[in-house]
Picture 1: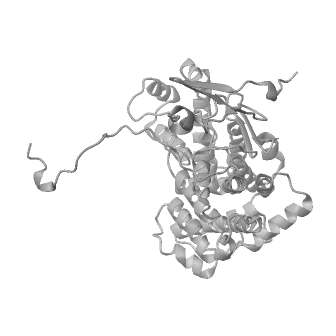
Picture 2: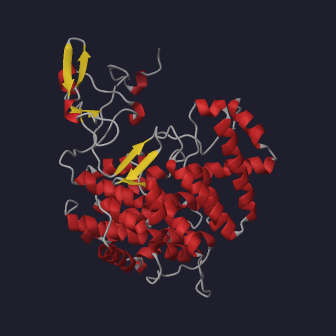
Picture 3: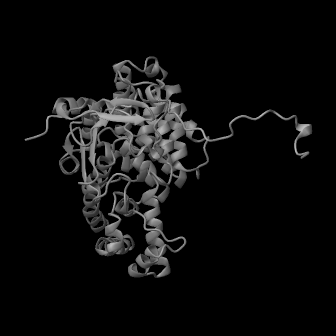
Length: 440
């Protein structure tokens, strides 16, 4: 019989002679919380939790993760079912609206997005102000925050549900075009206009790789694979970029500014750049002729410059549920594309995974492959340059950022983010005129 959450005791905190009852905040799944809002007033101290390992910043109904059991669910739906049966736009609707759409709702949602895929012609020239070789994440961040100047009508009242929906549609519609345009500029190739007759992901591939003087037929299996990768990245609870979106949005900044801040956070190598690091690791092993066994030994010996990338996760202490799906997809994509060079690296990656999962050093530390371990190989086989890996991540994560932003704004408990600190600097010093400094 399940334990009655109302019967669970509250927490108790004692600091010196001061004590405080911490009201329990029940969770429908996973860990309960205790509310510490009155702690500073009642005890004269603040909680110090670097990296927020044990601190929940909000209540949320969007995504549930159990890192010990390797569980990931969007709005209650297991990621395995959504990856196999759903489409990215359907998952976008689910995350933003809370329920899977009917056929009519999905059709209307998709049509609104397709109708808005074009970039304003003046807005397109905005991108030419950036160097063609500039990192696409910086260009994307600038493009997204710039949307508020072209679509200012949608930002008049950030609390208006209709304006929230309008901003969501415009972001989902135009970000793929921005990313494709950035890739084309970097390659010195012309941009293709969107084609509303194609699916969301298919048209993104066409705009990224197609040319105006050639027909571009895309293998449906490749379209499905990329669509599924977008689904796997669509949300992941209160990670660094999502927390950034919520923090900026808590000031009632518009959705464009808030999502752009998430892009900035995702650009960091400890967040969105991990799949690039995996590819660099595999390239290094291949180019130096290093065997998997030799590499593993170097990692265990903690030799300088040798790190095992794509293993371990801040949340998952079991096999990342997304990694198993991506591994199977890698086989399908590489077989369909006949990418022999990448296939060689996939074989190396699989051998590395097999050795690591049997080695007590990694098992003891609960280092399992994460979603980044195989995604870079798939993107490379599809033809994406390494610099484009993180923008692909951003496109997948976009609906999660939007959903979290809307949930945050509509939560009556939301307050503008303002963390406390534990100050450990100089206590008090008198100002010394510059002519007197350094005399003693």
